[in-house]
Length: 471
Ligand code: C2O
Ligand code: CU
Image 1: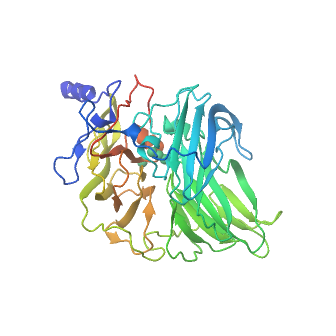
Image 2: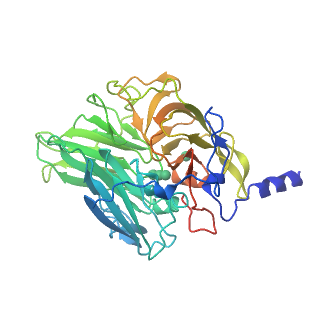
Image 3: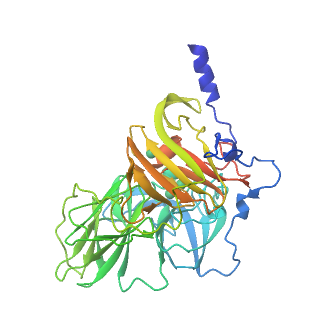
């Protein structure tokens, strides 16, 4: 009894310094001979070479200084938080479609080092901000420059990907908005980044009702961002609404919604289009906090969260996907479970991916240009918001029921317990990409895998003898 236990314990110990390339076994998705490009092997493309090709001067240039400091959330708690340029959330970065964006991250006082990840923006791999995979964490006194082209219109966010389960919760985050060249057709553009500070919800860094001045009769596009670890209900009091974008991608043929809520996954975004009524206001509710859109002093009665949910599997009108997922080059399974065992010498009931505990999750191998289909199934007893870096996936089916609405492109997909999601994507962004649960403590506990392109390699290391601890 003792001997096998001791063996399991010692076999679970994680080296003090290791490469992401050697974490788990390669999963070739049915294509023989595809394997990670191991450190020391000849050739290969280093992640640091996968950058934005243009050396031009940026169209949007921002410096974000990260600090640890005491923050008082108006209408909320006072806590020790992480700020960017003195606030949490940090400044909203706004770009127009096609702009070259350059962000300099300066770490003034975040003790464990920090990075910035561009959640939902399919940036070149070197810009992805994952400590130990695409860069070293930026130490106190250090800086790091990120450059990417804002080719995707929509609502995104940035956050630390170093000790993320702690740094994100404590506010090291902000919004990114990319607007179309042609503008928003006269809609008022409102950002509603939601975050729980010490367990209390705030929108745009304020608790309670947050007024937004909009004249009567005007339409607004309200960009809701869920930066927390759990799912968030979003609904509207005082008007119907349309879900016009999901995770940055416009919905095709959105219809008016009434008496339903959106169930917004951790990390996910929805853009809601609402019209301010002739008298009064419209409330965009997030459970504990709300944006109140209307003329100064206007108000509207709050309502309780509807029980019915907008089903994105059937919402909107179908449209060609732009690729054919019926004959994929690779087929993967990402099966999430849980069982007793050891992770890094710690006994517990640990998450598994395809039956393996951390760091044994597969490395999903692809070649550039492949079409990949992934079946995500979850039998772990809990729900998981799954996030693949560097790509958007389209939902093909849920529990075997085919999607019938607008193409549901997502980067943050809630996979409920005992649920199965079939998704597809095009491997068009070479690199090494995390594919993890965005309930960040789950990721830290080991609910993570990687998508790797053939021939791409990294010299960055993780582990306690390195500066890097991405989760
Ligand atoms: Cu929002 Cu791996 O991150
Ligand atoms: Cu999870």
